[in-house]
Length: 224
Image (tube, rainbow, N blue to C red; front, top):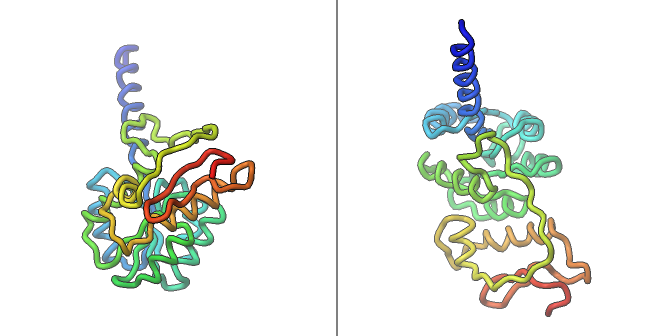
């Protein structure tokens, strides 16, 4: 093989590696083997890499030790509740989590959000809706399909700054990629989690203030 051919082969090899790297890697934790086969077909057809765990313990271990862009986690698992898996993962990792809940179980959805889930999807669901919600979470987490190295985005540091008041309906549409419902408290739980992560202002005040009957505001230190 001459030098030109070798160079061409190396370029193709690197291109192949990069193509593989940019595919987001998902972990699906569910004991329904038939459902997992369906999800594997749909998700891989949408250029996701997919790994599976079929018990809570296996899901916890994989979620903590694995390098995943997102975890799809079922609430009902054979050995432990998905909520316990989520709680254990959240102690060690901040990987986005989409919970699969029983249809109509509002308590499950609220509890999942309180424990740090990024979104929920009630069963039964269409694979297309699952893919849409996964894509929305990845966009919110900063994943870019044109990221040639397939790496998670760098953390951005910023100083204190004020913002405009953002209504709940705008936040739900922009952040959660769905229409706002008056009974949907998802964004409020996300704000609560965000406040806990950010901590208070240097003067002890809240970084994100509630504006009654409107929405939320990121405030300057000392501003009332």
